[in-house]
Each structure stands twice: as structure tokens, then as C-alpha cells.
Length: 554
Image 1 (cartoon, rainbow, N blue to C red):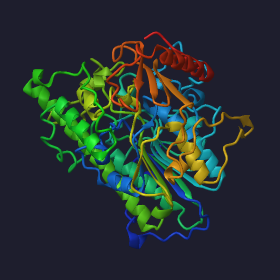
Image 2 (image 1 turned 120 degrees about the vertical axis):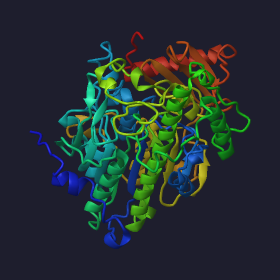
Image 3 (image 1 turned 90 degrees about the horizontal axis):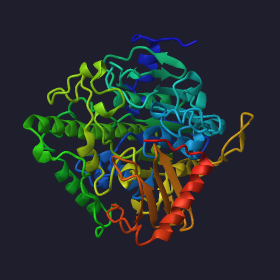
Image 4 (image 1 turned 135 degrees about the vertical axis):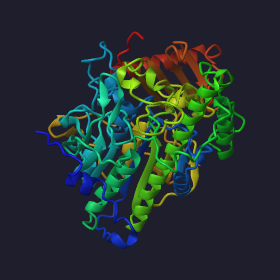
């Protein structure tokens, strides 16, 4: 039976958010007896490929940039097109259709419901990274967005996390009001501490700060017992609605008055200057369906500029809180023995809040004040939309929910003990590679059976030899990697990528790109290479049959 805790609860006040004692003089130094590295997995939500300074952004992200200096920055890392499918792959090492997230639960179609792999939550065909690490001698902690199951038997506590503070849905207000994203479906967000639902949040709650507080509290709770930890910090940031407190709310005031196209062009230049995009490659134009900035009224420009200003502030606020965790690890002498993985779950978000199912014209949306003056504050509920979504992808095409590079190529930075620091890897890598990498560092094997049931093997490859610079790539020209969600399909083999983007963002037909020469996907070469395209389509069909993809009518 679930117990409900109100604001005065000791769980909320004392266990979740008590980070008053994280200064060096108040933290006991940990005496480690198990020399295996700690693991901190940081997942950011809806971060555009060029939203970080070290990927070419004007947004200030000094802590992420320093992390890149201490580790390896990837320029060709890929994920799924949306939140929960990527998270399922990160935590299981296998394809999202096998893990139960063939589609997001809130987007599941009638044709997909009831099919294997479309449970809408992590199913019992998989064993999670947390379960293996917990059983293998690690403490396991989680804080932030879960999005992998709403029922108690699907909570983080049921999938290997000994301590967890989580918001179960795909997104929510960042304030204590607990407003959700979807009218008539998820109007109120659901938070849980371990197995117990939280009814009331502290009045001064801000999601990014409080998730950070919680993960540090969990790490502190077992200091000195000789066991390494796995901490999964799953920020809701920078998913809409765009909310951020001062001083970040005003930090970028006036920076985006030139509009979407100007930002897109600046990001293309920035990505080339920092080396994540080839200098001789062509960046993709602003998406054609974006509004013409010059056609907007002054009031519309004010709203759009403010939304991007607040979004940029959210990115910097996320960076600030990441810095708090890094400084905390240094204070307790654990930074040098901690693997840190930092990535986004998908590309930038092209949607306004009214685009979500059921929201347009709803009483739910009517209660919010989305004026330029109120965006970013409580009782606003705004997303920055298509123009900024395309711009934040920089030189890449498209964005979240579709398989253009702007939707599936994301930042990845990894630091680990003993690696060669400050390098960039241009090797292709995929979300399913994270779990094999971490298990190798933890000296643990993936089981074939778990708790009396057979579990699917991992499909990814360890990145350890890339990190140590023993190898320059882990995928050969013969290896095939493929993916799908919401009818959007892609397959990669060597330098070739074939993709199928449904309408309205694509033409509902297959295209072919030389993704090494043309990462901006500006030149479809399918007519010149029909045999290569057909071979890749055939391979994608084999993949779809293997993992159980269910295609539906748009």
C-alpha cells in the first residue's frame, strides 16, 4: 500500500534535499576498499546538439566544457528520437523494442498495444544496469526523470535502485505545483521516493536543483562503507515547459532578438570552430516549416525571444548544478575514481505545448499565462517551438521525434580513470554501447538468466578501448546499426546512412546519405546509388523483423 507524504515529511525535508553539509569540512572522507570506479550517469533531456559551449554554443556551460577537457568528447554519438526509448537502451544495452519501449507509453497506437516490446515500460525480457551493479557490489541511486513505467512494480526501486527520487512521467513543471504536460492524461506529475508516492513538494522546489540535491544526499548516505556507487542523475532539464529561476532567467535577455536563422548560422559556425562538424561540410538550412522571423509581430517576437532566453538559462542552470555534483565528488575524494557519462536522450524539441495531444484549446492550457513577461515563471507552460528547435541542432537536419541527425545525434562526454584527457572521438557510437562499457569497467558480466527468467543479451559494444585510445573505432564497415520509433526509421553501415522520415517533417520515402562527408544531410545520393540504398532497406527490414517493429498508419 502506498503511503503519501506531505511537505513536513522527514523523507522530503531530510532525505531528499538536505545538501547543507556538502562543503569539504562537513563531508567525511571515504575509505575505499573496493577499487572499482564509481559511476555517474547524467542524462539531459531534449538538449540540442550545439547547445553546449564545447559543441559550438554561445550558451555558457563551463562545467560541461571542463568535463570535456578531462575526458573524451564524441562527435558521432547516436540515440533514439525520443525520451523513454533512449533511456531504455541506456539501462539495458539492448534495442528499445526488445526492452518494452517500442514507442513511448503516451504515444502508443492501438495497433501497437499488446504487441511484445510495446508494453510502454521496461519489461521482464531485460535486466537493468542497476540490477547487475547492485548485485555486483555497487550502491545504486537514481534521481530525476524515470519515464520507464508508472506502476509500483515498474518504479526505479523495482528495477535495481536502492535509493530513488523520481518523477515518473515524460515532463512536468519545474516548480512545486506539479503541473504535467498533457491535458486529460498527465495533467499532474507523479513523484515517488523509492516505493512511496510524494503528494506535496517543498514550496521552494525547483526540479534541477532538487534532483541534484537528492543524488548528492544518496551518495553521502553510504560514504565510508567501502562500496562503489552507481548514481543515475536524469535531469528533466531542458525539456519544456521552459522554467528557470533568477539569475538564469535574465542572463540571456536580448541575446536572441535576431531570430531563428541567425542562431542557426551562428551555431553552424560554432560547431565548425570547435571541431565537432567538418569545416568543409555544409550545414543544413533552417527547417522550411519554421516561421519567417520577419513575418512575426513585435509581440510574437517578444514571446519567441523570451522562450529561447529562458531555455538558454535552463541549459546554464543545468550546467551549474552539474558543477555542484562534480565539486561534491572532488570534496569527498571520489572524482578521480568516478566514471562520468554525460549525454542527451535525443535532439532539440521542435514542438509548442499546443502540439501535444489534447492540449490545444484545452482548459488545462487556458489556465497558464504565456505572455512574454511571464514565460519562465510559475504558471507559464511554454515550449520554444520549431524555429528554435531547428536552430539548436546547428548544422544538423531536423530534431526530436524524427531520424534526421538533429534528432538522433547528441552530445556525449565521458571521463574515466586512466584515459587520455581532452580528446575528441569521431567514431560512431550508439546508446546501447553505454551499458557494456560500464559493465566492463565494473568487471561484471551480463547474465543470460536473471531471477529465474531468460533475459535478452546486450546489443551494444564497449567503448573502453576508444576511451583509452587503444582503438579509433569499435564499429567496422560491415557492422549495421538501425533504429525506429513512431514510423521514423534509420540504418547506418560504415559511411552510409539511409533514413525514412514520415510526413509532415519528411517525404515518407527512403533517402541515402554519405554521413561522413555530409553529416548535415544536405545531399540525397539515393538516385546515384540505388543498389546501396536497397541493400540498406533490406537490412532495416531484417532488423525490424528481428526486434518486432510495428509500423502503423500515420
